[in-house]
Image (cartoon, rainbow, N blue to C red):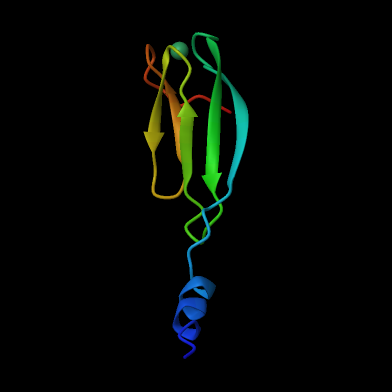
Length: 81
Ligand SMILES: [Zn+2]
């Protein structure tokens, strides 16, 4: 008796772990000239969400719906990537 068909179907639909693209961005505060290097990653699924892997000291991350921006922690203004 062959019972493997259901298992094969299950494997065919199995979720493949998402590959993550990673990169770094050099941040410079336009006010106090503080610099830092942030490490970001993006999930390779439909959402395309970006996450901060590493937030440099003196900066804070602002999570938006599908992206993120960085603020200088001392000046509380957006920094340019
Ligand atoms: Zn600043």
